[in-house]
Image (cartoon, rainbow, N blue to C red; front, side, top):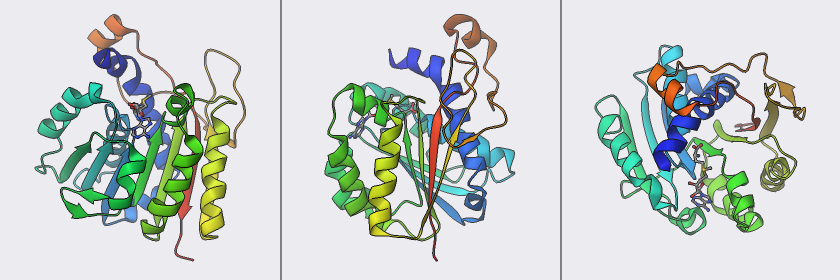
Length: 241
Ligand SMILES: C[S@@+](CC[C@H](N)C(=O)[O-])C[C@H]1O[C@@H](n2cnc3c(N)ncnc32)[C@H](O)[C@@H]1O
């Protein structure tokens, strides 16, 4: 089931994050990336970030990536990622926590040391929470109370999810909750043309929706993966002024 999810979705999801990263070019000026993926699953966002850095000739940038997910189904994939690319050899160190985000947030650590992310990603997490009747309001409150104040100036929050009326309002509720705490935040919203059905216009339309990566032909034949982007997105920038 986890392997099928990866083969079906990862090319689309990682491409969508890469498009959003292109709208956050100041990331290229950050000396190091500390990326927290809440509900990381198989780390689609990590692959989007690596592709973005590669396309901008910054593949040697140092990155720490903490993936948090309460579901053990992803553990073999996360172990594989840790061994294959996250062992520090290429400047990328990965760590994973199999925990519920709200319990972890008060004592956020990376490999045992207190840690603050400068990029936080929520990719297809609000839709998952909605489906499983998770307490999204409680999650947003804890994000705003504990995580947001820790994030340094010049940091980013990226939300990428289905472009659906049941899900997009949670993007705004996170934004409003953060705005109550700090006026130093800037927000932009985005959507893609959907090749398969009518889509809602949410902020600016990306000029393209094609994938940023090439799908290996055996995976293309066997799993019929999604071949274009279609999500809605919000980018929140915490500035220093
Ligand atoms: C649809 S998957 C998305 C996985 C990944 N972000 C991606 O883009 O492929 C949603 C994930 O969020 C996780 N999740 C939902 N609520 C969570 C929470 N409160 N804390 C940690 N993980 C959570 C679920 O276990 C699931 O693996």
